[in-house]
Image 1 (cartoon, rainbow, N blue to C red):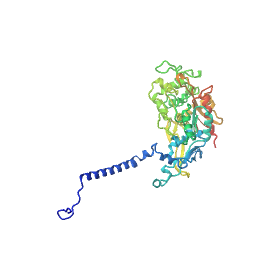
Image 2 (cartoon, helix red, strand yellow):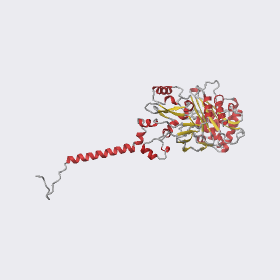
Image 3 (cartoon, helix red, strand yellow):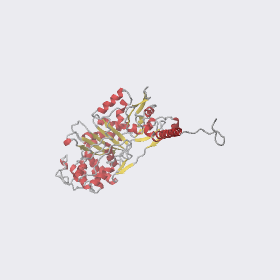
Image 4 (tube, rainbow, N blue to C red):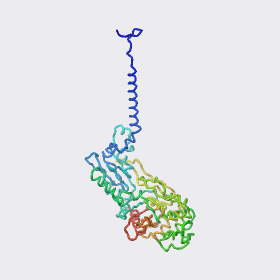
Amino acid sequence: MSRRAENGAPARPGISTTGRRAGTFCLLLIVALAAQATRVQIFRADSLDHNKANQRLTIQRYDQPRGNILVAGAPVTGSAPTGGRYDYERTYTDGPRWAAVTGYSSQTYGNTQLEGIYDDLLSGTDDRLSGWAVWDAVARRQNPGGDVYTTLDPDAQQAALRGLGGQQGAVVAVEPATGRILALASTPSYDPGSFAGTSAADREAWTKLRADTDQPMLNRALRQIYPPGSTFKVVTAAAALAKGVVRDIHAPTDAPYPYVMPGTTTELVNDTRACDHPGLSLDEAMVNSCNSVLGYLGVQVGLDGMAATAAGFGFNDATLDTPVRAARSNFDTRMNASQVALSSIGQYDTAATPLVMAMVAAGIANNGAVMRPQLVDKLTRSDGTVVQTMHPALYKQAVTASVADKVRQLMVDVVEEGTGRNARIAGATVGGKTGTAQHGAGNSDTPYAWFVSWARPAGSTAVPPVAVAVVVADSEATDVTGGAVAAPIARAVMEAVLHRG
């Protein structure tokens, strides 16, 4: 007989303790699986998407032609079909000429510089490329890659590379009123297209470049710092005028000769006997690049004043972007007086990128206003529709317009009467400062030859259209000085800008 409840209805089968435990365990498994799926799909989605082991993104990046990087409206990059795992491979037009700007986009080794910073835009995954980003995400539709328009002047870039030749060195040219970078060259250079793919030849090219002792893949314009030598005297002169240590650039200073650095028995020596006199004016000291005078004036300004003025031009800024991040240029903020003297002539631990030294020249040219360096003009969709326009922005007011005017006169006198004569341009007013920075054990290595300058048409009172910094790190010239080696390169770049159009 079947079991019945007391009211006569059939009784329900009982649920055993084991069954309840199994059900609870299954429920917990379902909850755990749901939690894990939520964690992976929502909270870890971004990190997994960008994990280097995730090949889906690399396949997506190269499954259509990549957007281009353009100079003066013309693309300097392209894409070519491969017939392999990745549908398209990055190509470069005259790759070594632009490598310091474009960086590389390699299917094996990733992306750098503009190729890396704007990878989403160039590959077509940037949300700004579509007005229907949500629908594109749902439909998993990829937009055509966008384009990056640079600020570069092709003639200035070519002049920089021609001047540098096979030497290790760099050139940065800037438009002082806007901060737009007109030339950014680093030598020796490399061809980013030589390792853009995945073949054995690509791997071999990469290995060879990485092993090259000349470091062709090092961006010397942005990522390498050098002692600036006497080009830093532009900063020291600006600081002396800004702090009232010097008021009249033609009046005798209190600088003694010989100048024994404070707390030492060491004289700060000069490279020419024209400097070996007490009481020289600031103008005489700049024209002849007198270490004793500028070192003395730096000490009179003091550490805080020198550091503050240097910071106004970009020193000690570890977040300086072009948008490519530049290495931090250094002016120590903890030094004794003798170290301040050496730092004020661009030695001791003072070190700068060519970018920051171009900012020094540009700031003086622009009435003391240093504009934020800008390598990109605009970003567009493939059809030319603008998605972002970059506008000039003030970086810092390094010194007043009055101080900048006096320093410009000092720089003009350097070119007209002093060590910068090789930068003179017919029909133009040029201001500059040479630098020859010693380095190596006992200063035994080849000096770094520097030149910083600006130029404008003769008779013009407008802000100069170009400012330049040049460093040559390994010249084999007999006379390795800033005036002999670097000034002619700066002159050629300035001429290219002045004569354009």
